[in-house]
Structure formats: C-alpha cells, structure tokens
Figure: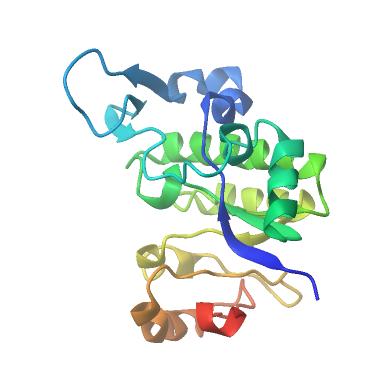
Length: 213
C-alpha cells in the first residue's frame, strides 16, 4: 500500500512570484532584510504594505532545496529516505490572510498555482498539490480551480473561516469534479458539514487525521 503524506508543505521563495505577468508586477512581494536588532526572522515578505516573516516556523531537518522545491530530485530523495511515496503539497505563507485587496490576492494565487504546476510537472507521480482560488473573485476562483485540475492538483485550499462568507458563492451543476477540504481545526467539523451540505460545486469528504492512520 502506498504511503501518502496528505499534509506536506512547500516554502514560498522569490521564484513563487516569477509567474506574475507584467501587468501584475506591482503586486509582486518584496523581501525585506533585517539590518540590526533582534527580530523573529532575518527576512520578511512585504505584501501590499503588510509584513510577514519569511522562512519562519519551518523544519530545519529538511534540506532547504527540498522544502523550497528548488531541487525536485532532492525532495524526492528525501521522501525516499522517509519511506513516503506521494506528497500532497500545501502552502506555508498562505495559511493566513495576506491582503484585503481582491486584485492582489488574485495575482498572488495565480502565480503560486503556476509555480506548483511547474513543480508537479517534474515529478507528477510523486508530488501532488492543492490549488488556491482567489475567493474574492468568483470567476477567477473557478478559473484557478479548473487550472489546478488540469495541472496535477488533487484538492482545493480554502481557509476554513471563509466558508460561510465566500465558498457558498461557488456553485456548479451535475458532474462537478470532487475536491478535498482539509479543515485546520477539528472542532470546526460540525459547522463545516452544515455549510458543505448546501454546496453544489464540490463533492466533498471531510477526513480527520485519525482516519488517515
């Protein structure tokens, strides 16, 4: 039986944003470096005038080139050492809201998704991923979900507390493709089920960690 790590992560780098077209260049995150004093991290992302720690809260036991997917061969070799057949890649930076502006969020999600698609193409049998839809724009969100399906994504990443506000706006007809939703907090399962019951776009199954063991 294959071993699947269904909650692995990739660490965003400057390359993540190189997939932005020229017209979205103004939304590209910048890197701020610590000049003096003590801070949580030595570098920070500047995104839409907000600052986020870069490369914080990451496992140092994983080679940098592997966790940043800069060297896919090293990532796969590390998986082999751990006895893992497939990684399902989740984001690291996107675990919290990055901007309130829809156009910025759309640009960030689009570039991230194309970065992950480029990673998947290098090891399609070993590396799968979850697509991030820009939830502030329904049409763009649908575009990104369909892009993900066509380029190796096996799930959709949405922060759980957005569900009652935005995810309910996404609807589809018969034959909609299944997706996997991974809630961060187990206590949210009951309220999530009530919301998901009303949706028609996704055929979702909530899987708890203990169900995967």
